[in-house]
Image (cartoon, rainbow, N blue to C red; front, side, top):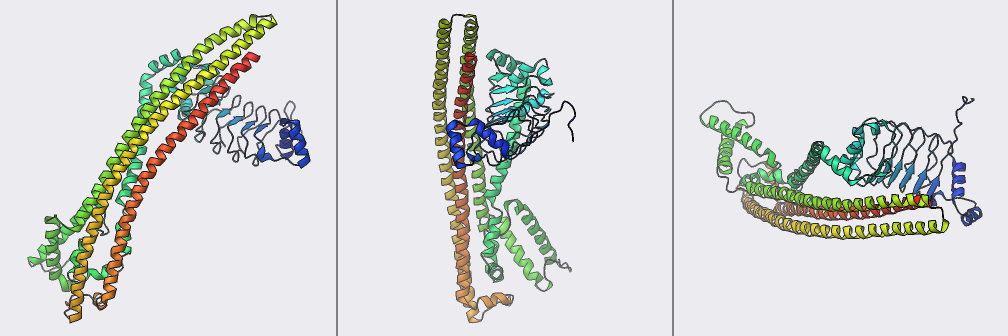
Length: 571
């Protein structure tokens, strides 16, 4: 079908186009090498320029897995797609296309520079994974609301932003709005954001900023609360008691042995949690009431009590409850629950102390960064002022020798500026290393103290388990002797009688259950302590990685800035 008059016939991005683009960018020696091999290895390509190719759709880039820079400006592209395999991409230019939506960037986690200028984009969105973004150009689009720009606040490394040519950039207070909500920004619309402008903006938007920071703090606290709930759930370990009972296959049978029931009832690992203790007490109190009613001669029986054993069961339950709930000193159950409560409370208190310590670190880190940025901004502002004067002087010089001398002097000034940046960065890195070392020491002390406390509490848990095992063992031995003599009580169940005809089976069952209970306690202790230690290691490693990444980004930004100055000088 013929294209309407004035419209451009789009080209297909295919292997032929990509090979031609790669060949155009390599040196003569590289061309000879490729010709000898009769093939091009796309996976070795680092830079790819595809501007002015009339490309309508991004396609066939899956082999460019090492690609660092991709230039697709001045084409006919309508959708961002086909970039999923470009995991090493740090620089992407899609300006001067027909894009209407930001999308398809999820995999580009290393991206630092993104240029989307001169398209038809109306909303800034779908960029959550671009955590390393430092420079974002979206000028001459259709961004209509300044509030939408606040989406970019999540990018802590963003130092240069271009929004000029959008409807939002024409609002009266545009510059102060951006300066207030993006205090770390250095360049806005390719111009240095002056320190005075930032100060004025922070005063003007003080109330709005405090409100936003409060909302962000509340959101962070909500996330911390979720983490705390997760920690509490782990500490309580609702599956611990149930998993122990699974390792005690004879528990139900042993419960029916006279004298054993009391020990089984007070065994610390009955399948109920702290949160259900009140319900359990309530149910028992209902049973007490039933006992009292029956003892007073009431003729009916409650469904949960078998008719033929009603009086015996009532007296047994009643007596047991008086001991268990009205003399709370000293069932294994209560002692174990108390220990579990102490472990939980200790863990949650320790979690709060760790949060406080980390928050103190973040405050110190933020202050150090603000002081550092203030120094860098002042250095840039002073240099920019002098540099602009020198550039005006250069334009007025006609004598070639004098011009060369002046240009050489300007180049020296730029090199000196870069050297000053490096010195300031080194001092900042040293300061941050001292702060991180202090955090590491404090967290190590906290984890060590917590581990010591928890080990002591779990030791008490094991002691209680040993005590329980010994008491049950004594009851079992006494019962074995009675069964051997034929002195079996009438209400003893048949399966219990059968079990106690085999002494070895009974003792093996008790010993196996005991060992498995201890194993579960030890496992829970190991999991808890391992989790806490892993958390500490992850925090320190995360902080160091982030600082290293920030250091590399800032150095890259410095070099990019000085390169721009050199290019201006050459022009």
